[in-house]
Length: 198
Image 1 (cartoon, rainbow, N blue to C red):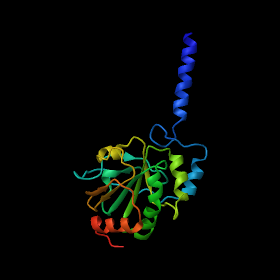
Image 2 (image 1 turned 60 degrees about the horizontal axis):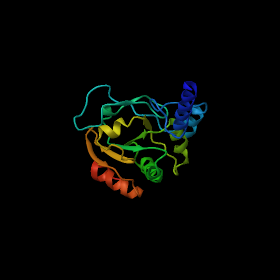
Image 3 (image 1 turned 90 degrees about the vertical axis):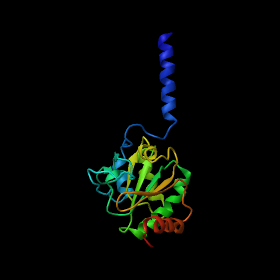
């Protein structure tokens, strides 16, 4: 009887974990085709970040692994360039819709404005598979934040997508918890909050 109960419980656990597309751990659980997905996504490398120092009104002091190529990123150490941080997930329908606007503006404004995606509650393979299917392709770098440390640290809880504007000194100057509906709308906010004209 005890063996049968244990078998039923084990089956239920397997069924529950099989119903989720979200991975556990640090978000980097590469499958056998992970290297191929990284190559196909062709994301820009993650930016270097300062190893120490923290701005009181800045991004949360968390270090996250790069989704594609490049070093881990300490968010609190992103300074020197105005930055747009977009919190997204491949499973998020509004994120899917706004990704093309972020890609368009990123292509137009780099290197004057740094873009960094924060892929949250997602498997790295799903996120990498999504990036090249955006038109134009999503090339801005992303880090993996499976445990929503950035959302929680910014007081956004579970508002995905969210876009955060960070000035060159590292201060968060604006947070938006709604999806962008056009590239022009995003450009206006970049000019308004970061002072960078298109």
